[in-house]
Amino acid sequence: MAFDIGAVFKSMEGAVQGTVTTAWPQAQAIFEQFEQTNKQTLADLANATISGEMSADELKSYLADMKTTLQAQLLASEVMALAVAQAAANAALDVFWGAVSAAISII
Amino acid sequence: MNKLILQKRKAAFLLLTIVTLSFAACKVQLISAYDANIHTQITTTTTNIDSFYTQMLATTSSRDSSRAYAKFASAYADIEVQLRTLYNINSTRAKNAQQDTICKLTLSQWIKYEAMHKTNGTLKDFQITLNRDFMLAKMQAMEVSERAKTLGVSQASTTNP
Image (cartoon, rainbow over all chains, first blue to last red; front, side, top):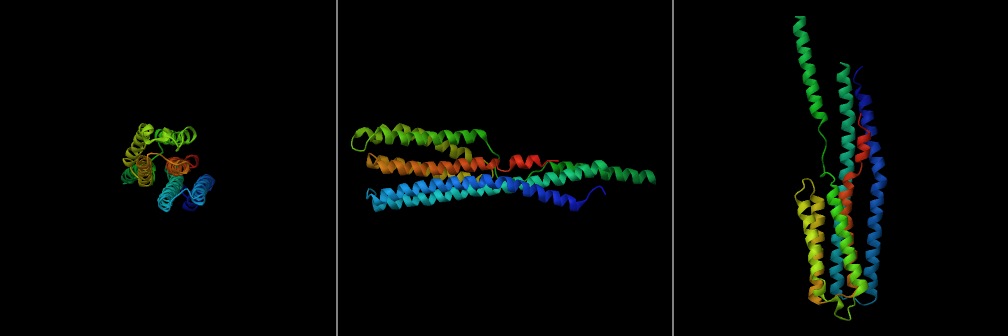
């Protein structure tokens, strides 16, 4: 049989799994970078508060900046997720069209 | 009769080939493509912001006029231009809503910190440290949102038949 849809789907699944598995450690490293950054920022914020240098209004203003920083990090994480989904979908499609092209050349 | 069947088969085969080739060229696109120039621009701006605050903290003091806003106004304007350029470039890219928002938040924060310096006339050490922390955190998110576009790309290409 020239075109085995079962085998093609299995290969597509493998391509998706391969892409996601390889991209995951890279994404994890980025999450760790964000975590380190937030730890440092919160430590500096705590030091300035404890030492009494910062007024209540200043603290409120910096907490608003922390909120937008977390928003920016979540948006960057969303880009990461979309990039992996895009790569996985394209890998699966490449496998599918490769199998179809091979079947056509056999016909 | 056989000739007619053969011709029909040939036409069907040709149609199938055309359909396959046209679909094979299609790619799923959920985000804008990676741009190495924009990535470089982001890292350059990050270095400039880091250098700006680190120099201010190391070479000036809030106890004298060395940290007066007027002495930094030009550098504030330079970095604001760099951030606005990044915002303008990113807002024109298709499927780039997330990065566009990050650039907008970063630019707004820079303008806020400049106003803080301008209004107070100077900055305390902890303000410089925190302004640097928050600006670099935003720039890191911006850099990641560009670099992330390469995630899984090499793996996808290796699966090509």
